Length: 172
Image (cartoon, rainbow, N blue to C red):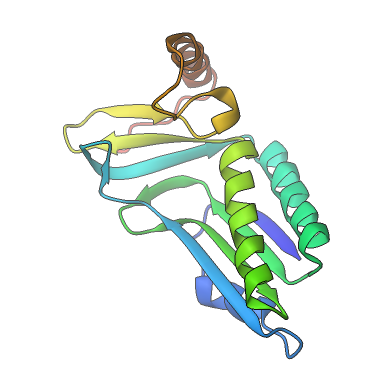
């Protein structure tokens, strides 16, 4: 069992080898990658930001819960922060279990919990030169089409406050 937050590219094949073991009949690899479009807008890249100690603690909790729930210690989740280009992996999950159903379910559980709970924020960089923080956690109501306008307003206020406290230098 292992988790981590990194600024380096994630070696997915190495994670898969790390969870492989003779007692496991199934290994599952999930890679979340930066896509070139979001909600009809062309994307050039994404900047992921986090308060690293808090994000590392929460990611560790998620992996520990998953290990207990699916009765396996052969689980790894790594999330990358910093600026990523199209096609680069932002999150990789490797799950292994004696049975395929549990390996799939463990992987699915981890990515859903990561999207729900992990305090990592992303700012998309669009082809038109604009950048925008986009919602990640569903518990806040952000990122869902059904989100209340008040939730979006609160999120925008948090983004402005975050930007003023932790400005990200323009890489252009």
